[in-house]
Image (cartoon, rainbow over all chains, first blue to last red; front, side):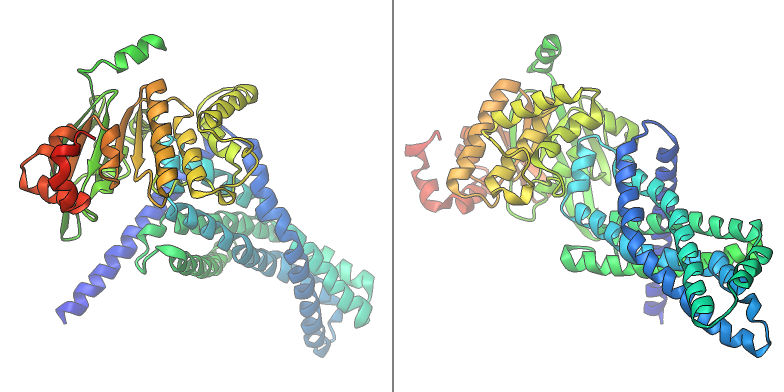
Length: 262
Length: 269
């Protein structure tokens, strides 16, 4: 009985400590983001890594999401004789929910995991200690460009996801299922307003921050991992847990932001 | 700069001072009150059996670990209680050669050595190039600028690590097992480079090593870490003549009883 309680307390303390560490890490990174010196090229490099190199996967997932939305939406709306609302249904689903969430999940899988592994290996091979010993701030040097790039890239990727999704919906709804093209876009035009765009934008900004925060912090604190962060196995375990945590956090925050903004 | 270097090499000045440093990991006490003084411009070698906490002592000196109690002073400033900003200032005088070198594996050799200059100074790219090439030249490294660490041998990686550690002309250079994993020839090469660069740049050196007795040749002081405390900090000749049972035990286990019995005829190293 006491042993179980002790274990429970131990777990509680560990996760509290971990949350505290990650909170301090986030505030340190945010502070360094807004204070000089500002470096342009490392940010550009990270935008290329997080943003540009994710475009391919965003195109594919966005396109097929729009297509399946149109397919499902068409058969549901047809029951009520409302096929004309297909454009509005596809656009609203994408802009308010699916665009930001799915783009974020794609970035978690592609760039988030790579960031955790990269920082984790740097931690394991003493490269982060080396930076500290050279009086180079690891947060400023390694994390800040990733944070800025995440915050810039996610809204742009989300916009691409939405646009390609809408075109995918057009392809299936209009070109394959015979919905009128003008009706498709008119429904979209009359039902999507600025609040919907704003919600998608806020979500993608928050997700960008959350993904980079979790991915980098997990790698940075690899040596504090309860399951043991050492060696190749430690890096792989921590990368997996970072991806799971970031994905779940994205979904939780998606609900929270929707609840606040609706 | 010259004046500064002269004052740095004032023999009375203590570069690093550890006072009653204690550190435990869980229930295991690794350091049980370490006391050590490192004089400026000298080479202090910390030796000890595996698992005695030599690297832990080094990490305390670097500010990578904080002691449970005690003081770690670098030029009079207690880095155990220093703020991050103060610690960063202190570390500007440091150069470190890590046991596994810790080169940035996704950067070229040139970028690795240039990194401290790019991040810590306002030097132009031309000045950086001149400095980096001078240091690589000093380490007998030619035509490696555009290679990546993984493309070099272990010995070459160590030399790049040393070039990076020295690129900002630090006052104190720390070496964590500098010859681990190297064969005799490559080890000798590292020792030769260490000897040459120290003679030229006149930095204070702290070396953690198990390469006994070879490392004794380079040392001004040998400090033995055993049972969580520094048992002595004396010259290598005194170390090998010492009758202290812990030192004798260390000498016999690392150099072997044959060496130990023949020592009188062969010493000094």
